[in-house]
Image 1 (spheres, rainbow, N blue to C red):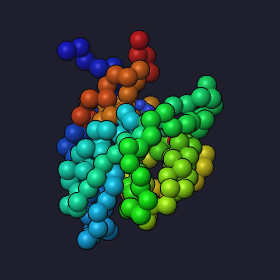
Image 2 (image 1 turned 60 degrees about the horizontal axis):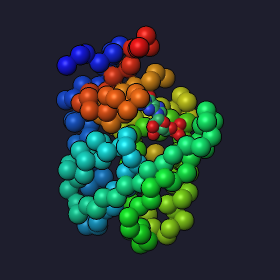
Image 3 (image 1 turned 90 degrees about the vertical axis):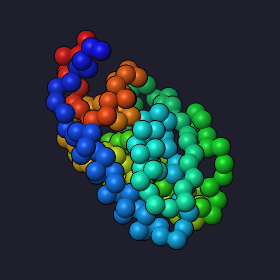
Image 4 (image 1 turned 60 degrees about the vertical axis):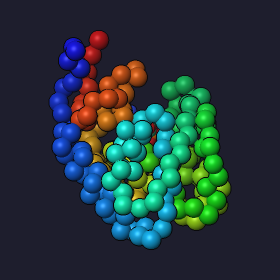
Length: 176
Ligand code: 5GP
């Protein structure tokens, strides 16, 4: 296989899985004795969500939604393109994100899901890039803070590629 156009690895496979286990342990403790519904955002959060779900020591349900942006280059202009299969009313919901960047997507999803009367709703993200935040969102659990560089791997893509890298890397800016 040709090597992906990577500038540097930020977090290795071992670091990612160790950190996911830590965060999963925190979540398991926090929701001890309860069921948890993990809500993933397609497609970026799929790899993280499945790893997290397997490491959480609770009865877990999973569901997915997909969003699409309609504002061209305007960040945060998103709508739900594929909705959840089931209601979340009365459930403890954990919104699972690949990355919280400006926060606009997460804020939109949080508001939308909160309107469906879950028992509780919390946010868990693999990556957090707080330097680019435009709106405040309550990130309850995060695996890693990252610098202001475009990253791929562990679900994150560049033109739909590189989601399956098992590490998180900065993409080479000279990529073809
Ligand atoms: P936000 O609304 O927080 O600005 O954007 C979140 C979405 O932007 C993420 O779910 C992800 O799809 C995309 N995104 C933001 N930063 C990156 C990045 O560094 N790499 C990749 N692959 N996607 C990113």
